[in-house]
Length: 307
Image (tube, rainbow, N blue to C red; front, top):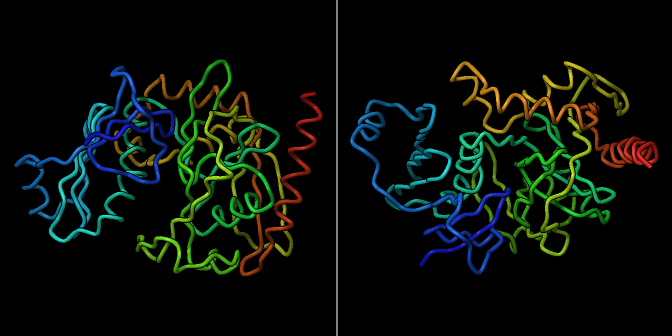
């Protein structure tokens, strides 16, 4: 059975059922991404035997996750998966949902930022930052406060005069500490083992935005040697450099040693049309309420200027 999905602005026909994705009754065959089970080539299998775990080329990327699967992403329109014996199917799908589609967007020259996305005043705001910066905790707190949710970990951006963030899927991946802070029942939510910790897949169906929203701001979260939360705005080349640094699966671009001119122009267009803020919080101190207060103040002032 083939499943039809729409996620990150991509039309998908998938042999693998992914319950979290937004389903479509049918889709036309133009510009479709296919996801299927397959058998890897002898070349890929030989590479794995030699200890290689990933290979990045212009239009073909494969990577292997021990005891889970080997994935091959090609030409911006095809994902093939070969399962390992006794693979954890939940974890196998997580790599399809995130890494594989991230690579698809890079091959399609579609900018994707690593971060969660919240709708504020009918506009999209991306929250990015390094692992452990508090992206999921902040976006969950905003969702709990009543703001709508657009995407969890990947912000797929399309440009139509101005940049728009396309909807991801109506679930968030939260670490154990975030589950505890927000009082979610760990027994009632699907869990999986990520690179370093257990994470939980929490539904956000009622708060989800099913259409693209104009991107007006990116907020980068950092942890620093500060007593209180601070916020500052980046401008010019600093803003552009930070957009490029936070591209989802940006190691692909670094490996190739160059950025496609079409892709770079999109990054410039994004930088021209948004405000970029850096929020720095103190380590080992729960400051989400203060972060939200500072962010709301900035975005409210921005909205008043636009009006």
